[in-house]
Image (tube, one colour):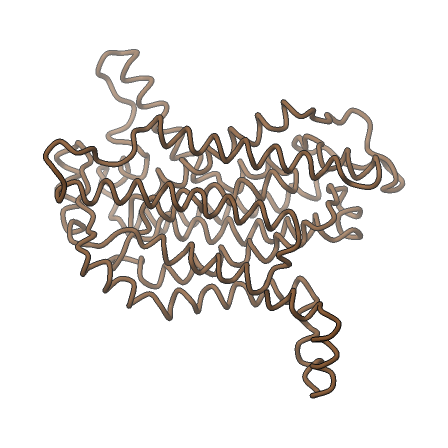
Length: 396
């Protein structure tokens, strides 16, 4: 709203008359607003963190984790009194920052807000059902059923994918339309050698069905992957902060014509506003780590993990970098893969396991690593994955 307000000619003239325009005109630069988004979202979480935690404690919204593993339950017993649903801090901070600093007239921003609010509501409802089951009648359900949660995740993925495809189809030139629908494979350049006036030969241009299918699966999968990673103090928050900063770099490239053409990266007009959203995510996650680092004062719960994962995937789909997301979010997808493998192997062998416990961060915890060691080493992996993704941009 603040950015949109200064675009009003009358308001801009008024600011110029009172000699303030020279101080606010810098907001016309997306890079500056992205930096401000990191700082603002961080400060909002810090400012309202203690009050929110106190309110959650008063509501007795505390996590009573059950890992269905006696050794792990013993290791994690100290967390029983820690409040959860701290994701409302993260989501509220991201929402406020987007509304203040992003261009709310842009379609990419509309869809980002939809993904954020949709998954925050789903996650919040799931958390509330889990954490208030003891207050309700005996036998009340503990959270949404797995298929119910997945249905909502797939639903928002399909909606976001459809409108992203339509938005791309509305671009004024064939080159921009094809760039908006291209499937970027590893080490593949987008533009032909010698200039950016034509796409490189051999590119896969997705139709509506394939585009929506990929967006649906990726948004739902990433949302679940971050949710599975949220099992130790600071693990998901730190990993998301790293991934968000990496995505900020990618959105800068996609939204800047000269840089995109130089790196043979799809240029998507308007996607530069996703820099502000990536910055808001990074700042909110860093602010949340202030309270979520070991020993955690609050957990994000599904209220935070579902929208963070979904929003990360939405940005990757919007800038046509689904494959790079698999690298940037390597820690998250490693966690999800460990669960899939564990369940499949358990059923196939009728009771045998690959890991001591899944997701895989619990496996290492049971193997003797301290929680701080697990979290720090997974953060390091997240940084390495992000660096590999950045380096691969030039290898086209």
